[in-house]
Every structure is written in structure tokens, then in C-alpha cells.
Image 1 (cartoon, rainbow, N blue to C red):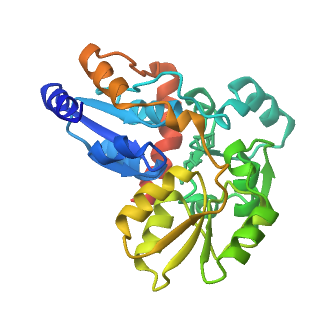
Image 2 (cartoon, rainbow, N blue to C red):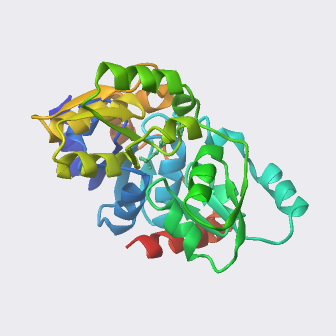
Length: 298
Ligand code: 13P
Ligand code: SF4
């Protein structure tokens, strides 16, 4: 199957991108693995004609927003994001109307329609930088309440919070972390900013998925508790064979990130199925929010 996919990628002039939570066999075959920000930037930089995006729907949409001339394939169109489902264009428009005029910082985990109504995108890797880049003192940050509260704790700006969250990260409780720390007192605790504030208060490092990879590589510590989706254990252990990584909780599984298998990748390349294309009237305003973030992050 791996040889078949490699041949199809070549035949179609395609690149395969995978998020850090994808199943090991998908990550191992991909041309590049990364966090949401790195994958967005790579999608914009590639010369390939086809992008096979192994992740969830909003990620493939972001690739299509940035690269409208490329064919973007999501091997399983049912791979969604439960947090992205917690906001839509109608509810965001209503919220904006209820507030005084202010910028909207939109987490990349959102649909293209929602991005189109927003000022600037952010990811978990750059949220504080994005918030501080705006001249305004007050803004709405949506849809992740935990990310918004984390950003608010790192800046003196006033941040209005949307009541969305990631169920996978919300499952991690303070008592799970206390237990993991008691079991592994020598370990550094790394947490993703989608975790609850009480969990982040216990973290030695708050990082995006690729931020965790970088931190573990550069750290002189040898043991780490990983506070994010358990798919992260594969790349982090692979890149650091001499270090030890413990999941903060084995319950942290995102079903949507586990939908894509090798047969789905082969099938989408064979049939050119699973195309994700954002209509131009949505893409143009959404691109403005995405581009503003990417320009800040380069
Ligand atoms: P990263 O951008 O840190 O990879 O996170 C994406 C995501 O969906 C986290 O749940
Ligand atoms: Fe969405 Fe959470 Fe899955 Fe990330 S882990 S894709 S935020 S549901």
C-alpha cells in the first residue's frame, strides 16, 4: 500500500501533508508532518498540483483558501472538528452585532465562512503574537474559550471569549495531571493551550503540537508528560528515541483525526475524490484573515 501511494503521489504530482495527531502509518508516509500553522504555510509554498491533506476538514479548507489553483484532497470528508462545529457564520454575525465594533481573532479551527467574517486568524502556536499585533485594546477571540483565556493571561488586552472548546482536550482534568505528575515526578509537563485553565496552571510548558516537538528536542530533561491528543506520542517518541514520554491521559483521543487510513489515501489519489474547494466569495475574505496571520508568522 505504501509503494502504491508513493507511485500515485508521483503520478499526480501530489504532496502529502499530515497533522501531528494522524495515525503513525500516515505520518510515516507523509512528505511533511506539522502543526496547523506549519501545514498552512507549507500548503502555500508547494509547487505540487495536488495536496493530499491528512488531517481534518478545516485544515484542508485552509489549504484551499491559500492555494485556490491547487486540487486539495481530504481522504475522508467526514473528518471534521468538534470545536469548529461550535461556531457558524450566523452565530458569529449575531455576536459581532451584540458587541461594540472590535476585531475578531479566529482560531484556525473554524470553517471558511467563519474566517470570512473575521479580522485575523491564529493558531495555538501564534495566538499571543496575533493578539499583540492588533492596534486595538479589545477583541473577540473565537471559538476556543481555553485558548482565549490563555491568551488573555499573557497580554493586557481585553479579550471577549466564545464558549467553544475541544472535547478531546477538555477531558484532561486537574486530577489526571496531578496523578500523572505523582507517578512521574521527574517529568516535565507540557500542555496544549486547548486544555482547561486549571490544567494549564500546572504546566511547565504550554505549546502547540510542533512547539512540543521542538521543546522536547532542545530540552536537557529526559522525561515528559504530554498533555494533548495521544497521536502526538508517535512523532515525539520517534524524534527523541532516548527520552521518555507519558500521555497525560489515555482518554485524549480525537476520533476525527483517526479516520484516515492508507486505503483512503490511495483511493482519493486514484479517483481524485474528496476534493475540498472554497467558493471565491468566501475564499477572498477568508484569505485576508489567513494571510494576515501567515505574514506575521514568517
Ligand atoms: P496544533 O495547531 O497545535 O497542531 O493543534 C491543532 C489542533 O487541532 C489541536 O487540537
Ligand atoms: Fe478539533 Fe479537538 Fe480534534 Fe483538534 S483534537 S481536530 S480541536 S476536535
